[in-house]
Image (cartoon, rainbow, N blue to C red; front, side):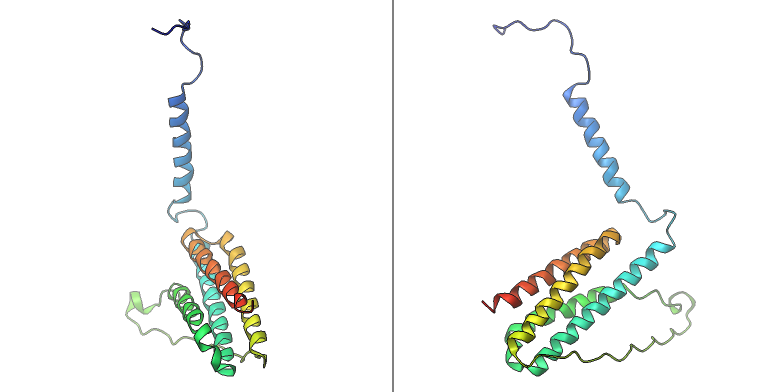
Length: 183
């Protein structure tokens, strides 16, 4: 028996265990509402917006890949430094492209799929004659794209937002690695 007096009446109000249980239930409800299926009112708009966002992300990665290719063509001595980063950008383009195309009508009807519209001719980016300037421009392009992807993920569906965040972080790391070589 404790040496101090204990209250003989029961405490009023909720117990700690019931508060914790209620808080856990509320948190679970919030998490589950974020993971609901796509049967919301904007069901028709969401997939097309996500597909457009994926297509734009694939196109942006393709343009960045073109910049890497142009710098490597102008400055082949940078291959050892740029090839690993270029390979990552190429993977990013492929990942975004794999989910950006709408399902073809041939999948359900058996009809031949229409040919994809040809991409507009890409302009070859101008590359500075100085290697350091060329690398700085690549770093700037990586930073700008990472920043844009970071802002786009706010409106993206969960899975695409995670992908955009991951690729944005990768782009920011590329920008850092490209500028770190100048020091």
